[in-house]
Amino acid sequence: MSTSAQFDFAPLLPAGLPAPAARWTGLAKYSFVGGNNDPDQVPVDGLIEAVNAVLKREGRKLATYNLAHGPQGYLPLRQFLTEKLKRDAGIACTPDEIMIVSGSLQALDLVNHTLLAKGDTVLIEQETYQGSLNRLTRLGVNAVGIPLDGDGIRIDALAAALADHKRRGITPKYIYTIPTVQNPTGSILPESRRAEMLTLSKEYGVPIFEDDCYADLIWNGERPPAIYAMSKHGGVIHIGSFSKSIAPALRVGFIVAPWEIMSRMLPLKTDAGSGALEQMVLSEYCAPHFATHVPRLTRGLRAKLDTLMEALNEQFGTAAEFEAPKGGIFLWVKLPDNVDTLKLYQAALAAGVSINPGPEWSTSKAHSSSRLRLCFASPSHEQIREGVAVLAEVCRKEFGVPARSSNVEKHG
Image (cartoon, rainbow, N blue to C red):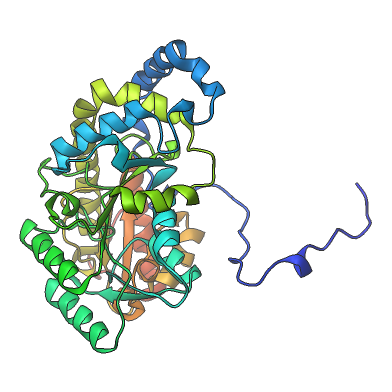
């Protein structure tokens, strides 16, 4: 190994780069972070069969970029999606209105780079996906948070914000919403509110950016039609993903949009196509199995949510407040006001528990400072119970909550 000085790249780096990444040190012993799913529910055998069948039949097509199906992705997968979206979300679209992308994060990037410039304004749910917030910050876009209640985004607050911006001569570029199993709160926006949002969108000339990537994971399997499906005037871009329904590491998502805007996004997709093998395997597996796989997956997730809520009630009592989500993989938890979840995050991590602190998922640091998001899909039932017990112990030590009553010792 040479002892000479290493080449210094620092002076060559342009301004505005994100902070450097830390080295990966693995997941925490009790990991309640990220959108990871249940390892036991990945349909491994079905995927193996699908790989073998589709590679034998069509493997030679891998010699051509995009499998010779064009930049919007593998046609059989887009055809599967047209049927699925019609059945589940009420969306009537053709394969030409669908683009396959590398997870819904690439969908976010493509929509943002098509519509946004530095200094623009967007309206976004006050509690929302961290990936969306981070991207808007990096782009220098002003993200204005609209408060939520138990049914999702408050339409009165949205109307007030649109009117206020209009008075100031500002037209927001879009309204970003996660209407179906909201991240992180788990609410489902009722059909009536979706209709009101569309009315406001038309009145103010502001499109709706609908992120539906949790929509498959609803406990009772019933959902309102997608906002995209309800729109009579266009003006909606819809994105979704296979990350939550099949497996996150596959990195396959999709955009549904009218051709006039799709045609502007396509030139920005500069990766020469999302991974073809993943698309082939998903199409082969999903066509016969998706409709039976998802209810089985959601039953398993619902059982883990019950374990998490029981563990929180047992370990925290009334100190942890939460509404049971209507689906998905997250529980949004409110701890007493004196708990700073950014500080709790550090202390918990040192004890082997990783959590998502609320301020990273909100436009309002004050509102979210004592809140946290827990992913219950990935840990086992045993890890959920043990992890919550460790988290409660850290909360007691660091913040004095939950208070231990003098005559009851908790056995962890």
